Amino acid sequence: MQSVVDQPKQHVDPSVLAECSDVVDVPHRFIPYDEASRLWAEDRRRSGDCKRRNHAKAVTIKALTK
Image 1 (cartoon, one colour):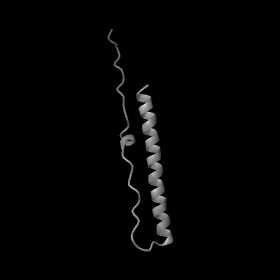
Image 2: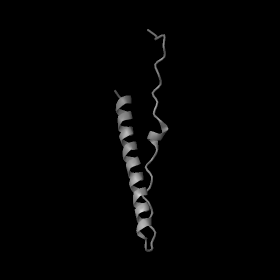
Image 3: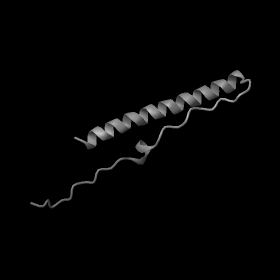
Image 4: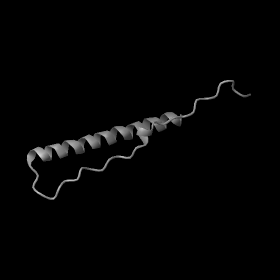
């Protein structure tokens, strides 16, 4: 029997499918403390974004395969 209402299409947000950013490039020279702190903070931000995105991928895949 055909359903009167079409089933909703499965949707995965494109941001979840994005690849992780590369690590921060560290210059081959002396790096002052303030620049090193900024580079470290940027690297940590990218790492955290990647971890959250990978978690979202796992949650999405689990939800779609139930």
